[in-house]
Length: 78
Image (cartoon, rainbow, N blue to C red):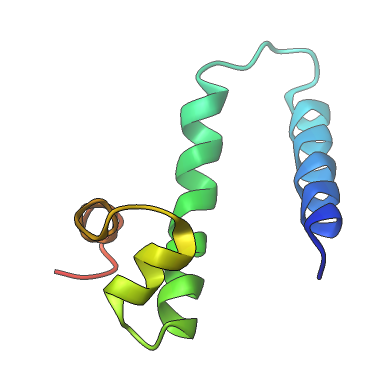
């Protein structure tokens, strides 16, 4: 799957979201989208990194402590 394909999936999902709103104006979309995307992103990356937080953080381009905090926030680790 290419970056372009992922972008298309996100675009289609956002279009469907606006259609489902039926004219009602959305609120706090940025936070909603980031929360919806971040958890599966972290979950899949951790799976492919075989639970290695240092490797996962490197792949994600974030600090290991930031990754750990996000994993706890999303209840992916204790």
